[in-house]
Amino acid sequence: MVDVQVTIWIQGKDVAAKDVKDSRVRAALTQMGKDLGQKLQGVKCPTHGGEAKDVRVKIDKAGNGDLRYDACCPELSKLIAKATG
Ligand SMILES: [Zn+2]
Image (tube, rainbow, N blue to C red; front, top):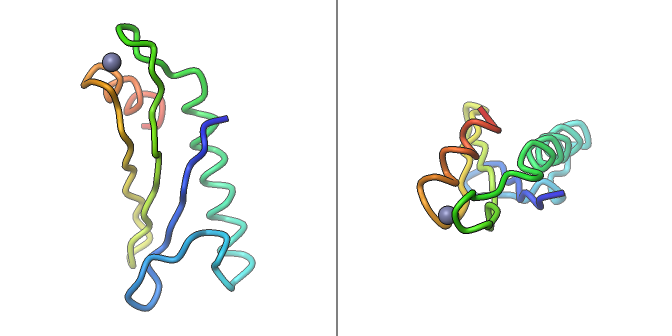
């Protein structure tokens, strides 16, 4: 499974999912990371064969997630957008 780092903006800073004190929020964020990791599993660039790297999701104050990752080229980015959309 692709490793996804989930962080949430709490009181002016990014907090990693595992460091969130509220256990329900922590569980929800952890699950979100797992779900994304599963969606990204097997998504590979047809040209370079690479996967998404350094995948992270930032949740803002409004609860919106912002997915970021490193991709070798726009083609892989397109596949990732399709897989996670
Ligand atoms: Zn590529």
